[in-house]
Image (cartoon, rainbow, N blue to C red):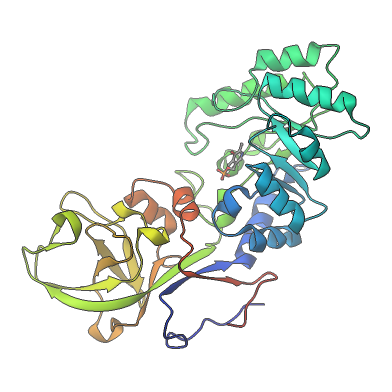
Length: 383
Ligand SMILES: *Cc1c(COP(=O)(O)O)cnc(C)c1O
């Protein structure tokens, strides 16, 4: 069910809103799933509240698309997801917290074992347990973030007293967003050697960008996150995934700025000619990063009004941002007008790049102030 957007004057007090298209998330999952090598399963990474988009909306949409295996970062996130999806397989990427074995098992959360000591604690828990709780094993192949070294994994596999056999062995690529980087092939070949350690375990290497590296990287289980949410996974990514998020905010006022005058804090942008500018009710408290605007030194991102580009000028402030209205006819830029901050007309990755970051950070920093609206999926609101 897709609800029709509210007319701009429907809600006179509305400052702006974030629209999240659950059908697009579901379709992106299906697209990724269809790309995988035959027999590989597509999981879904929904850590950090589904990359800031709200697990309560996203998880049921992914489940209805067919996703059965999920990765979150923390046990709390796992519990929240368990409440939404009683049957799902849920892995906790942060691993096993000391003393928490029974709590993981009680909620059927599977830790991604990330160190030798976690492996030992889990093995003793298995020994003392009537059921057979499952877990993944993270083996580091070059990222040096989490995971056992390959030597440690080998020792674990050769230890006669070890009763822990992972349901899945995972590793994580450090440079998957750069397909030409030699590290990809190195990590791939190291990961292949890991297979023999626990021959019964499934294997999982690819995040979103790893999926794009090709079928060699898919193994048994892929773990896309960012691509589900419509942001670019790879520097060379021109994939037909659908945008999921649209951020809009209200134009508050317009004014004229004269050539040579500066705009905003730090006077970082100087007008090169007389120009009309607008003030938009969105700022870094809403997740628009402070450095997204143009300064005298560098180009900035743009917003979109009535299909026209409106460059951001100067520093983004907490609640308000100045844009150029040079390309926008006056009657299209009256106060109250809704401006697209990013979404279908303003690629999230362009905004992120101008702010020297990545789409992941833009999504996970979306604030709580703007109204959130889910369309499609189970959560179509009639507005
Ligand atoms: C976050 C994460 C993913 C998902 O990565 P994307 O780049 O968002 O697809 C997969 N695996 C691990 C270990 C992660 O931490």
